[in-house]
Image (cartoon, rainbow, N blue to C red; front, side, top):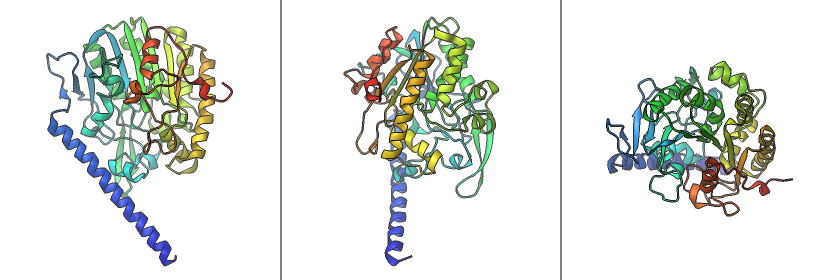
Length: 396
């Protein structure tokens, strides 16, 4: 190797180390600020106030690294409940299991696939933003009651396995794929706090978007069978992988009802097909995505090319897959409501478009064809389902 190449390699390495340290510093600083400012959500008291976010630690819950697990709840209108499945990546093999998210890895753009614990920083991802924002009067769901089922297990909320893996430093570790137990314990809390809502919104973003069709049937059948108005909404749940069935069965060790319906590479589509075959038009079904999702395209690039990065080529492939996914969702039922957007955020979306919107500030701020996602979702839960952004697809 030439001196010039060695210098370039050393400079890149030093740059990555600096970025990683800077990213960890920023995350830790934000976490300390949340802790010290009094903005950290308090544990649910015996007499909770309305329109206040609380944490509920779950004794039988467990995060991926074995640390504590808790959910967030907000008491408001008891007749309107949103059960929200949080996102936070996915681990589908030993390589991804060994690379959880840290602020440093994100800043250095190193492979990082899932959040493996809940820490003060993750509060920013879960409450007081987008659909969970209680201060924004433009949020049409601010007066709804909420149960936010947090996510730190890398298993689309359905896993039931203690998975051994080798960490990056060679040590032996365990990833606790306990998403399903966390879900069950969360729903006990939901049923106790909100026993009989008539309006039910089951929603999720990113990994939570995948979970919506997988778990909606259980939410309704086992906890809210008398709910009259039920809407399901998946925000950004497209990641094609030929081994989803094997992953769900053997790595997450999910129960048979989760892995058996998976026959193709689009797990979200497979679960919606299965759901519709069982429930027909009982649920209002909704799906959203940006057309060149910068983050999901990076995940897909890692699956196909072992490169955890996004670029114009893989974003185009994501777009082509989205065109096909929308077509197939409409084949399930033409009443499937779709919201597509082309929103970009400089320095974040890296030439692509946003990843998720329902729990982001642009839930109310951005519009597509003059319509915000917030208004589209509000109309849908009130029975007025329509599509936004289909003009962005080829042959639409």
